[in-house]
Amino acid sequence: MPSTTLAPSTVRLLVTMLKTIYIAAVLDRLVAASPVVRLSQRAAT
Image 1 (cartoon, helix red, strand yellow):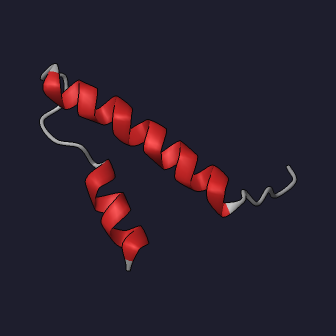
Image 2 (cartoon, helix red, strand yellow):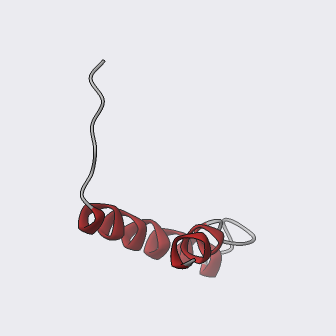
Image 3 (spheres, one colour):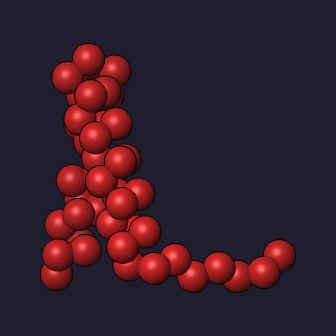
């Protein structure tokens, strides 16, 4: 299977979409907390 590298803008877009989905899931009480918060904090450092 070939390795694929995503552009930084693509990764940002995917993370933003994932954050939006998890925010809705938290508000609907489907999950207790969003794991994406930790992901975005790591990316900022």
